[in-house]
Image (tube, rainbow, N blue to C red; front, side):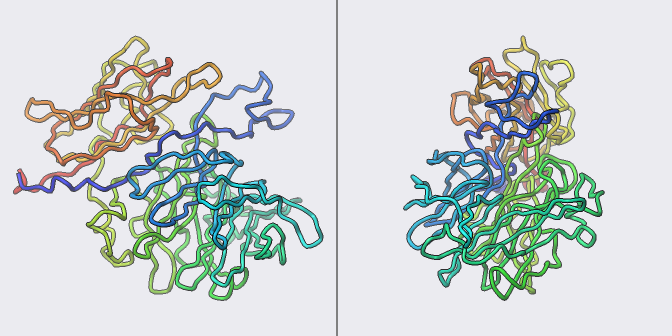
Length: 504
């Protein structure tokens, strides 16, 4: 056989495969007398435990990527393939953390949080204090972003809104004292105001049906080749049209912004596992490359249950940002892969260069399973839907799911998106690794492609690559989980391609 056995190597796949996704801690529980948190909600408020990770700021420093999401910080990688969870102090300063380099230190803040400083991107972070207006009034920003410009000036951006009969949402900016960044020198200055009449991606509603109100949030300021890009999210974190758009300025970090023509920057195709692409950030990486990190809505157990995705960003001849491969849910080459090092991200054929050329071979295939719980049939592991999942019967201690590929295909990767069916932190049913063996079958012979039968990392989204292998069927064998935690499988995706005639 003459095929490229390494075709799937050095790839990533969305949603990102991150270890130890933390417990969701949103305090928005619908209740007739108000909103409550996990810690103080009345017994009458019923909400299942869930996990979530969202609103990522990503910082590239000295060859490493640092990921700071809501619910817990931080994750570190040097290759986009293996992320390590490193607990920071503080660990969870509410939502939307952001970080920037300031002089020889690092500044960190988050939603309704004070400002912190550290000598390292991973802390320990020391509290500097709350932000303070020129009149002495203190405040903590919502969805903050801190940006330090090349001239030493430093800025804060945040979400704001005006209430009343016709509420308005906006992004505002502040110039901070470069010696004491807790103090505001100028601001608030309005950077972007909602414009649902002319910008349909801002219109609230899953189908953008509210033409009179737009929700904009999650500002992130990027400076690239002398231009300032204000990247923001809209219209709702739990909807499939959650997206990211861009204003840019050639004037200053707080003036002269205009909407780019290529908006929205990031929006997911309707349906599929990667169901949206909202609140996040764009960061400069190796070879002057641009990468976008975004929030994916997966609102099954809770409306704010979310995951994170990442993709490439390029710049066109007019200096506008766009995504050459779009929002992806198939294997993509990481920046450390020799196949893409030094390549031009903005080239017309960049999609073909950066996409690994592998498709899901199990999507919408009706699988064979050893058992299923009522209403959780095997087909729900291959229907490419975050609201459904296959769950084996309670008395099935060796569940198996198998898909016929309807021909011989070269398979090089698998993505397993698990559902924590009966997650219950209070009673000790906490996340634990899922042990499994993933096999290929060809001409009546079975062989192991991934052996995860020994307990390893806890990965809610588990993406593995291996040598391209000719398969007619693929099979997943699952072992019992610890702590009595039941296993559900949201998505079972084997990635590959049809071999050329001369590859057989």
